[in-house]
Structures are given as C-alpha cells and as structure tokens.
Image 1: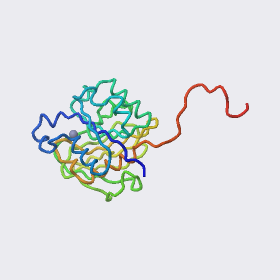
Image 2 (image 1 turned 135 degrees about the horizontal axis):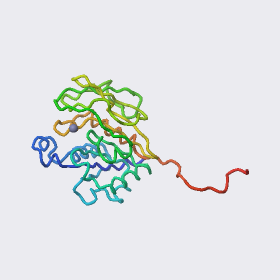
Image 3 (image 1 turned 90 degrees about the horizontal axis):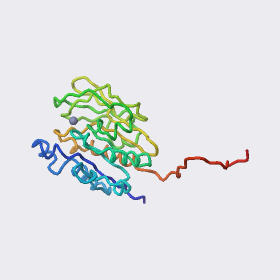
Image 4 (image 1 turned 180 degrees about the vertical axis):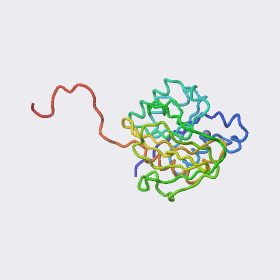
Length: 241
Ligand code: ZN
C-alpha cells in the first residue's frame, strides 16, 4: 500500500480572529476545520499560518509536504516573497498545490499563473450550483452531476487565468454569472488545482461535497515517482553521431 500523501494546510488565519461571524463558523480557524476532515480521511496532516515564523513554511516543512492547501484573503501582501519563491520551487519539483477561493489573488497563485487572476465578485449570499463538466476526472469521483452551495459569494467571469489544462467544474450563480471553479494546471513536475468555494462567512468547508473535492484533489495533485529530470549540457550523445 502506498503511503497517504502528507498534506500541509496553510491559512492566513486573520478573519477568524477578528470577525465574530467567521469565528463562530470556524472557531479553530479554516485550516483546522479542513485538517480535521483530512485526518479523518487518513491523510497525514499539518497546518501552517501566516503569523508563524516563515509563515510556517520552512524549507523542511515544504520538503515533507506532498500537497499544500492555500487559503488567504486579506493579507496576501504580507506573505514574504522569499516564502512565495520557496513554494514555487517546490511546485516545480513536484509538490501539489490546491488554491482555495480568495487564494486566486495570492502571490503564489499569481506567480504560478503569470496573469492578474482578477475576476468579478459580489457578496449577497446567493445560491451557487457547481456543475461537474469532466465527470471522468479523479477530482470528480463520488460527486453527483452537480451540487449546490446555498449561500455563496459570487465569483464571475472573466477570470483572468491561463486556459486550464483541465476544467473540472463550472459554477452558476443565482444572479446569472458563471465561473470556472475547478481548474487543473501543471507547472514543472507539480500539479495545481484551483477550487473556488470557501468564502469565510458561510460554512462552506463543513459541506461534504466540498470536502470530498478537496480530498480528491489531494490524491490527484500528489507527486508521482517519475524519472529524475536532468538539465544542462550533455556533450556525449546517446547514439554515435
Ligand atoms: Zn470570499
């Protein structure tokens, strides 16, 4: 049996400390809610937050991490560029990265996408219907044709990202907008999954379908034992020239 992936759940962890509504939904923080669920699923899980030294993302922590989950919103600019670069290097080396919701504007996601990652948004607590558009994809395993989030913040197109390698989910919102809400990318050896749900004032990370997607995405994004990559000058050809 292969070892379960080692997951690090990173959270900015500011809203929960400042906003009573958010604190009620996530008394121990969004990271602990997700981590508890993943532990129950058999993953090896640790958490890291912005206010820890090096944001909890030392080289050692990243080296042990197969898949990093990222939630941030109000303090993207406080994430040190050196840590962003460290995470980017690990993704290129094969670490999986799952970027949640407002993480679309994180330094690390923008650095890996190379675009503004901007979008439309509105906060009215409207219904979101998430359609599975790639039903054979491992991230869609166990899901129905669509599922709904009763109250969500709207994110609308245009979402300024590069065309995803695979689009797994499209969201429809009560107000009429749509959004590419489950996007797969490859960067170097690493796999990246952007997953839209997760506004802090709604109990979205308590919803079974949403948690199922995160678990599925970890399995998809986990590194594989592919061949060692070699770069540089190779003066001796494999065949006689
Ligand atoms: Zn939000």
